[in-house]
Length: 151
Length: 252
Length: 164
Image: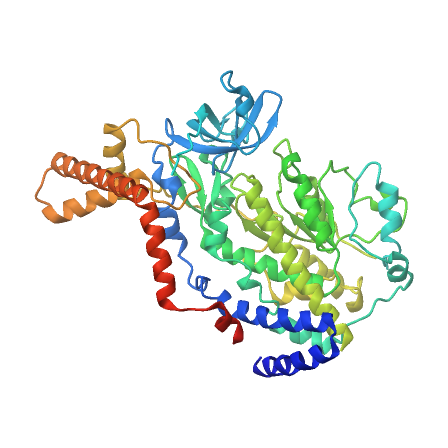
């Protein structure tokens, strides 16, 4: 790495004489890249130590919900089909809500919305089956848009 | 005896009904005219096998990555398959949670196997049923130069392949099931068929799946798109590492 | 090439080994995954008839859940949660304050007392934070000027960094 620095330094006066703009550019980017590499790792967190799963779970927002029924969460719309909005709020499944009449045009892909959870997974036992059948969806009530706080 | 002859004609023939996405093989005719492909010397192969983690798959992810990709979320207790109990950490108000330490161990094992099979020039097939993530899996399979089948599975694809494709076929050496259930929540036919035809399988099993017929199972969430993307990313990385090593060793 | 399609008998490995022992499949024609399986066998044998283990599912409850229940019971509206953020939620902060307060009392106080105190602490914290934010906004220009002067003092020049 050190030798490379030296060689680049030797290159630069030569390149100026040769007036080869490409070589000059390469030498310049070389020094910039080296400087970048030096300071790149400053903000990188040491990713060797990872929290154990048990503590990750204990401090997770999912456990924090407690009993999820009736809790209000924020979600983001990731897909729209006519009047149905597919909203992802950080859980295993997404939920599908009908487009509200108020501010209907504001609900597009990427909008952040507020939801009240009714049920996290729509699944129930059907007659004759041992395991219950799941709809692969959560059931939530759309409360409205997230009010953007002006900072 | 059934050596591969022509991957490309295979895909052409089944293009209208089955989308078997082929790898981005730039010059297909070159690689398929030879019957014997280049071989890595067997002593080198043995050495590679002896190493517990030759392709460094253990540092492809951390438990936190799996946590953030929502891999620990399972279905409700009502749809739990009792064979999945050893991999479940517990149930929070009826919702099962996977033990990510165990999942990490199983996943590392599966990634290692996938990398080794890619190193040995094995054909790998990604399988998924479910329209939401179908495109994602196909894209990742294409990026790592392997195959994907995320559409309707016709009965005899493995068991009656010569009649189905109308040509001699080479079956995949490894099947990676990103989910093992099909859209009506019964097990994917290919799980049983792969076991019949002696094909090794890696499968992501959710809490409502039957893990018995899968060679290497990985307990985890298979419904969230984030989770599916995480699996695809990891398998793609492992396969590419295996292939890179193969290329390196063939040039020695 | 010979094969055995009996998926309910043994595993793919045992069947492949059996075929090779019976000389139906030569060593050169063995499956690609055979060596890999031999070197890295799976933790559980992939047998069709592997029985379900006899274990019960564990219910996940924590000590904190008691405090959480008190908080949620008394306050129906706790604001919007966000499952995806790493910022501690109101409930989590309440649990921490509750624990601190109960430690201060060293187990002598009543549940209601600790709860009331914890709520007080949280309210105080919130009003402090709002004040801080308000003062911050007012002195934005001051802060900018401060930052400028600080910059000149350190005397760090970009040229030096790139000189290496």
